[in-house]
Length: 203
Image (cartoon, rainbow, N blue to C red; front, top):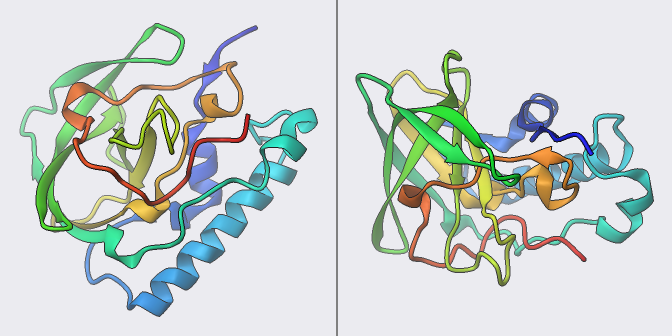
């Protein structure tokens, strides 16, 4: 079986709602409605699109995707401390290979009263059209996918963002092992439980 890229760009282009960006965040009603609409769009993509990573014969078993209930408290402001030199960081992948990414900077934020950070990346040599934020947390391997989850952030001119973990999603390798997906680096292994976003897929 040939390994394929994790396919993040396809889903992100189809579902621009997956991207979080700068403040101000929406009010809670709008936030809940936006996330609900986004999840419905993800469902349609995975069930119907020719680029869906889920083989047709597995869609009835894996869909609909399981999620935590929408919790507006998991949408928080963040500031990106930009790296002047965009250092290259090798990220291990789900197939045991190494993918090369450049660290754009470090996102600093507080969640439920705790100060946290996450490194933000782009593939080596690519322009900063989208920030890639892989992470895992204390739910990984239990309530959520063992290899971690992803967030996509649309770059802002101010370095101010809103991180909304309700949009956290599983890499394609969670549904199909022919995909090769980067794993979260040590800096993005959070010692908190993020009970928001997508849960572990059905077996």
